[in-house]
Amino acid sequence: MLVVKCPVCGAEGDETDFHAGGQAHVRRPASHDPANISDAEQRDYLFIRHNPKGLHFERWRCDRGCGKWFHAARDTLTLEFKAFYGIAELPPRELMEQANGPWAEYFRQRLAAGTKP
Amino acid sequence: MSELHVESPLSHVAAPQGLAIGLREMTGRGMIDLRGGAGDAAFMAAAKDVLGAALPTQPRTSVSWGDIKALWLSIDQWLILCPGGRTAELLAALRTALAGIHSLAVDVSDMRAVIRLEGEGSREILMKGSSLDLIDGSYGPGAVRRMRFAEIAALLHVVDDNIFDVYVFRSYADYAWEFLLATAREPAKIRLFGRQAAPV
Image (cartoon, rainbow over all chains, first blue to last red):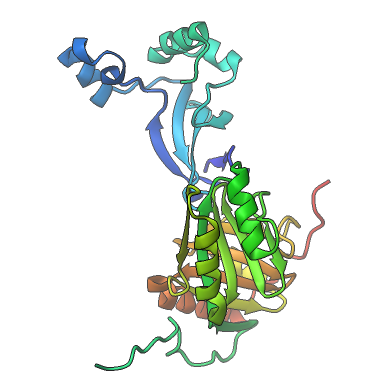
């Protein structure tokens, strides 16, 4: 059983009060460069998800609470939540540095640009 | 044409017998769903003008003045409770005041059934259907919590220490009522829990 805490309303409850929304920080290529998007990029965006053993970034919804979406960083090995943060926010810096797979490059770019996700 | 016949969701149920707590449906309550940004000063001021007191901005709280209550549902949503007869007047006043402001006010009086639990042991009965720790001291009078209750969406309003209003969607009224009848029976009473002090 996972104990989730919504960063929007502060409600804490077990996972059945919430709704898991899959991988977070998935970049939609068509939003950024619609003219030069390949089939492979679009396929990866739609279907290919990262499945690491360890640190995972995911989206959750405070389903039976305030109804808002938020982000969570969770360890898939220990099931421990590392952080909860808003839907328009980036994770804490130390977690961004530990990120691997597609997130590592994404966070590096976001930090360099200094913009929101 | 026949007259419009309005009845409450649980008007057909009999008064329950043999329960450990008091259980009844609350009828005739006007409810207005009010949405708008808590950070929008114009919206908050307009709502305060009409309702007479500021909307609560603290999560899971409510404010009460006169015969009106405002329940915090989300950072941009409130449920306004008023006597059924005042709903139309209040709604019209809200819509006038909120004209031009990005907001929403809708009469949802018939959207939900309201079930009241009264008496010692109500918290334990509610805990049979939810994952909330209702006896840890954080759900005092005035607290509001949307929750998963008996697998369905419900809204819990702590009216007083041992008085609870449970709001469920109208189509779930019978189910919620039956669930409460079964779990609130005297033989099903839980004696394991005592009231605990709030964690320091």
